[in-house]
Length: 277
Ligand code: GLP
Image (cartoon, helix red, strand yellow):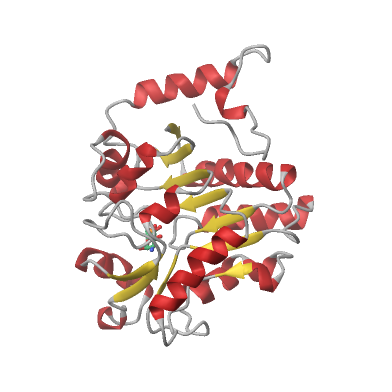
């Protein structure tokens, strides 16, 4: 895992957005996996700015969102459909037919989940997946004890998650109890992954994910098994990591290396996605 720590949220958002932009510039028809929650908002703001000011082009991009609450229609302001349109899609030149977000209102969840998985495959697989992390270490809505091989499916949310996400709803009892979510196995098939985390409220989950054992009790820890993961953390989110000095040292050495010295995080694979290290 590549662990990049910056002083504040804006810096990690800009750095993560630059990685997305670098991919789109080298592969204009890239497939992006997108996340909701407050943490990716800074990335989306920066991508919108790059589209507006620098012409970052989304016309050939395809997207797949991680999850959606069961029971919320796309027009519900608390739905992830609404969130994505509000904060990203309506501000960029993405083709509407290239946007995929799990349905929270289908009649047949099993069939929908099979279709969603197949659609990802048919579109060539996810090139870059953006992830936040829950305070219990979940990625998407893969709550503790989710199988690390899980696929897109219905999930019952943990009480902690319902409590954490209640801030977006008028009343805590309005928070849905179920969600449709990509599985851990689905996420791990993305060619590269960016995890962003901000604030000390995420510090324990982040420490478990990066330095703890690989365990379904913190599904983000499964990312240790992936060959191309970058974690962008602010100092608060990094505050329970034991190896901060080491991560900072690697970051410093790689960013100051002369051009003749290979810099693993800048090497490109034929698809334009960075090589692993
Ligand atoms: C929800 C989403 C996750 C997200 C998490 C953290 O549970 N399903 O994808 O990572 O919230 O959200 P926030 O960034 O608001 O802390």
